[in-house]
Image (tube, rainbow, N blue to C red; front, top):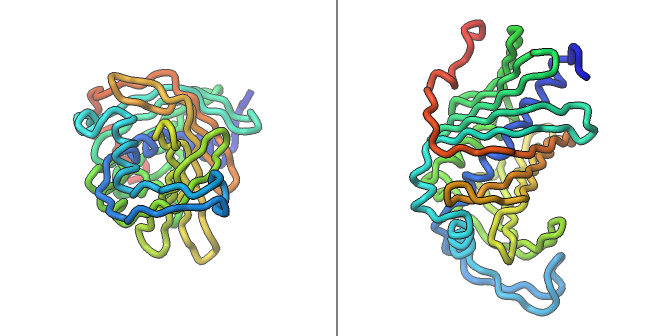
Length: 272
């Protein structure tokens, strides 16, 4: 049991807790027009023989249909998720609540066994970690860029604009899944790969790589156990890997369009 955990350890647990929010937001229709391509048996992870690759636009349209349809997703303005989060070495295992509100606000809250409450918040322009004992840490650099980027994916128009530069580059094995690989480059410093299951058309893995002066900053997500919630499909099991740290999230409940006040996403008074 954690009696008085270091703030950095608690910070990691809270920071990893937002895994499911941007993943769902990425599963949307895009306007992509890359020409159809083929891969051969020489492509790593590809099946034997030449295989026609879908265009990025067609692939994401299939994905949109698989998770419930663009019209249904457009009606969602907020979500409340509950579950548990656990580090890979089982040293941290706590209940978690995740809130998101359109277009780009996110909040995760965990309560540690000693009663300390941690919140990770993104207001769309900045992101930070705070705790009930008055601890506060503003996110900066590539970590902030990663958080804001994930929050932006809640905005369908921004996602569509970004994905318009995408290209389906091949087929690879991801765990038990065979997936199309869609690469999207927002700019020269950021590369995103979406791995879409060939059969289910669900996103099963994502990779974000941000180029920094110190080297690449990588964030990976694995999603599984998709379930229907009010006609929409969500991954209920997520693994997040960031700079070698791994946290597993298992959701137990998702609510669509709960009322969420904007004051939930404000910085605490002691941080102003």
